[in-house]
Amino acid sequence: MPLRRDFLRLLGLTAALPALPAAAASGIAPGSQPVVVSTWNFGETANAAAWQVLESRGSALDAVEAGARVPEADPDNHSVGLGGYPDRDGHVTLDACVMDHLGNLGSVACLEEIVHAVSVARRVMEKTPHVLLVGEGALQFALAEGFERQDLLTPEAAAAWRQWQETAEYRPQPNIERSNRYRMPGELPGGETNHDTIGILALDGAGHLAGACTTSGMAFKMRGRVGDSPISGAGLFVDGEVGAATATGVGEECLRICGSHTVVELMRHGRSPEQACREAVERIARRHPASRDDLQMAFVALRSDGALGGYSLQPGFNFAIRTASGSRLVEAPSLR
Ligand code: ASP
Image 1 (cartoon, rainbow, N blue to C red):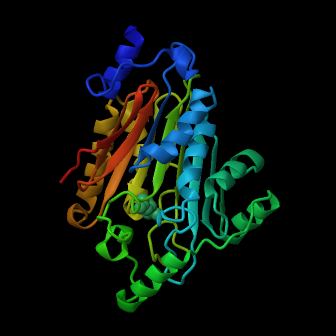
Image 2: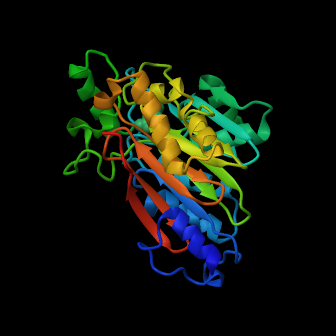
Image 3: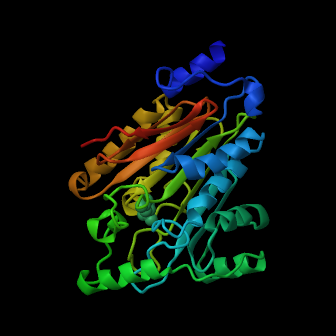
C-alpha cells in the first residue's frame, strides 16, 4: 500500500498511529485518503462530526460545516457561538466563513442571535450573489432563511462580562478567555473548554478541499469589531490546487498580513505546510516585535495531497487531526 504509507509519511504519522483499517470498513473509496484538521482541541467533538461526513463519502464542505457547528452549539465554549463572551457592551457577535476548493466563499460578520453562524455563511455563499453579510443585514438574511433567533449570552458569559467590567478600564484584551479569571472551574488556562476559535479544514474522498472558521471573536471587544475569522485570506483561505489554511489568535495581526492567504501562497511556492505557517508567524513577529511576548497567533495548513502542519507564536497551541487511522492531538512548534 505505497499510497497509504506515503500519505502517513506526509502527515508524519507513520510511527505514531496504528495500521489503517481496511478502506471498506471505513466506507471510504480505496485510493482516497480523507483528513480533517482543526485548531485547538476539537478532536473528539468537531473533528468527529466532520469525520462522520467524510466516512459516508460526504463532501469536505459538508464535513467542515458539520464540524464547526459542534462548538457553535456548545454553551461551555466561550469563544464560539452560543455562550461566547460578549463585546464590551454585552452583545455576543459572531464571525464565520466557509470556502471550498473552487474558491466559492461565504461569510458573516457581527451576526447576533443566531447560533450557527457557519451555516448562515454557507447560505450566503450558496444563495446570494455576495460573499459577506454583516450585522443587521446578516441577521435579516438568516431569519429569512429560517434560522431561529436565540439569545446567545449565557448566564455564565454574562457573569464573566460583569466581572470584566469591574477592572477592565473598558479595554478589550486578546485571548482573555484563557486567563485564570475566566477559565472554567478547576481548569487550567488553555485547557479543554477555554480554547479559542475553531478553524477546520478537510480533504474529502474526491480529493476536494474545504475550510470553515467560526468564532465569537475577541472577548469584550469594541462593539462592531470584526476579526480575521470571517475574512477570506485572513482567518481562512482555500485554493483547491494548492491547499488550505486557517488561523486563530489575535485577528488584527492576522489581518495585517492576510495570514491564511500568505500560508497558502507559501505552499504554492514549495514550502511544507509547517514551514509556510512558520513563515507567516515570523512575518507577524517581525512587523510587531512586541507580539513575541504579548499575543498568540497560530496557523494550521492542509496541502491538497493531504500533508499538514501548524505553527504558533507562543507555545501552548495544539491542533487535532482525524484520518482513517484515528485521531490525534499535536502540540504545534512555536517561535518562542
Ligand atoms: N482570531 C479570532 C479573532 O480575532 C479570535 C481567536 O482566534 O481567538 O476574532
